[in-house]
Image (cartoon, rainbow, N blue to C red; front, side, top):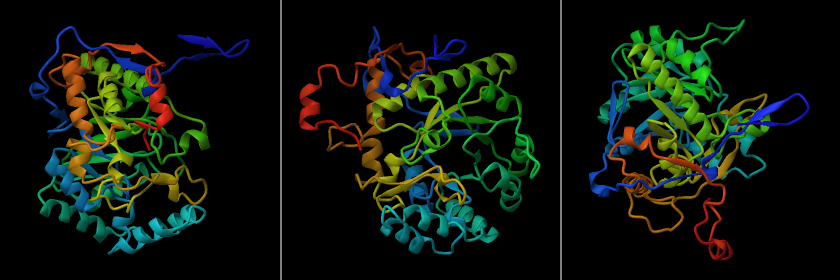
Amino acid sequence: MEIPIGRARKARQTFGFDDVALVPGATTLDPKDVDLTCELATLRLDLPLLASAMDAVVDVRSATVLAELGGLGVLHLEGLQCRYEDPDPLLERIAAASAEEAVTVIQQAYQEPLKNHLVERRVAELKEKGAKVAVSPTPIFAQRAAEIIGPGNIDALFILATVTTARHISSRYQSPDFKRLADQVQAPVFVGNCVSYQAALELMRAGADGILVGVGPGAACTTRRVLGIGVPQVTAAADCAAARDDFETETGKRVPIILDGGMRVGGDIAKAIAAGADAVMIGSPLAAAEEAPGRGYHWGMATSHMGLPRGTRIHVGTSGPMKQILLGPAKRDDGTLNLFGALRLSMSCCGAKNIREMQQAEIVVAPAMPTEGKALQRAQGVGGTR
């Protein structure tokens, strides 16, 4: 629906997680009978979960734990892990910085040059742990990263930037050839981020094996405020999922949609799947895990930009072990623990036995959902989120 915003301009109405609700199905299932496995190109995961390629979330240790729990950690190839032999002192310094100093400290830490041998080492360390190896360069670094990694050493390559399109014009560098990169590393190439039907469809036609959806929704990201761009995640997921479905009709190939960012609680993840996502990528909830490298802090990927930071450092604290955050048991009532137990129960209430069926769940526009009948909870501070 378009709404007039002036004499000659209209704006399309869009929706985020708090604007919608899922309608329970006429048939319900035992939660134990719900299947959460997902297929992302050649990857098969027990949970439809990827951890954000951010330094406060993924290192070799946390990626290994995530793999054991059924998810996938994506290592940031341009982060501290590939700039420093031992990144721990830098991580400590970032965590210890005052709020006023944080951005400057982060900017300084990321001035250390990337080192080819550390890219090779981190990939080797992940392989030694027996985890699936997923790594992420930006588009400008993608070709060099593929050359360093070589064939057959990773399970997935994620080419991520604030916004990525198939028609990027630059006088400084050539846009990556997704098909060529996939051949070089002998692994599927996932590309992001985008939020529109047309951008997603063109990335698929350009050879992307998966699409990351979301511009600016993350808790540590300030892109929406700094640049004024973005689309609420429910609408972004639905639009890009429509591109996926049309591309599958056109070619017979299904390119998965991964909703990236903005999910705080299990209900958000359930809505993301219902809106069309095949899996989700989350950051701040996992940065609060005991195994996370961020020491209770989380910062946006673009915080380190020297000219225009588009991220900030936030305090997420420590919620508990990664297993408790993902699979419970929950010892709080705010929905931030046992995220995938919540997804399983939501799917059972909607009568969806797998991810594909959950993508067909009925969605209603329901802005009153977070507040209806909850006056006492709000007054007592019950059920709040970070």
